[in-house]
Length: 83
Image 1: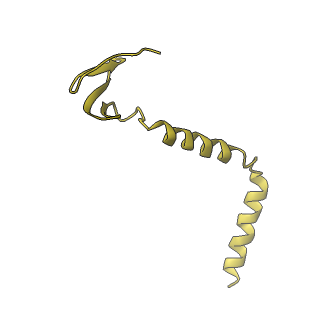
Image 2 (image 1 turned 135 degrees about the vertical axis):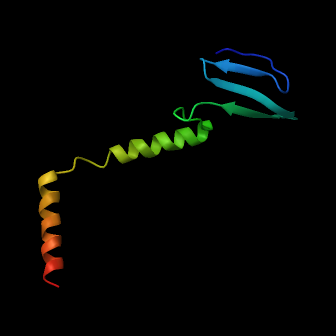
Image 3 (image 1 turned 120 degrees about the vertical axis):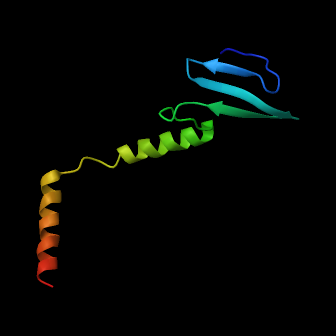
């Protein structure tokens, strides 16, 4: 881990296109400004962890049997036509 000291309005650059700027220091809190391209997602760690957990749980839902799904859709369509 790289540890740096920065003052208000000073920045660090990550790669070629991500800038992290110290916006404000107040007591125990540091306010950061992060500039990054739209294709790079930026999240607080607790939000990132929640997203990963949700994605992991979603991937556990099992395999979709396409033939059964197709049959179910056809059944539903035929029920709609009979109304």
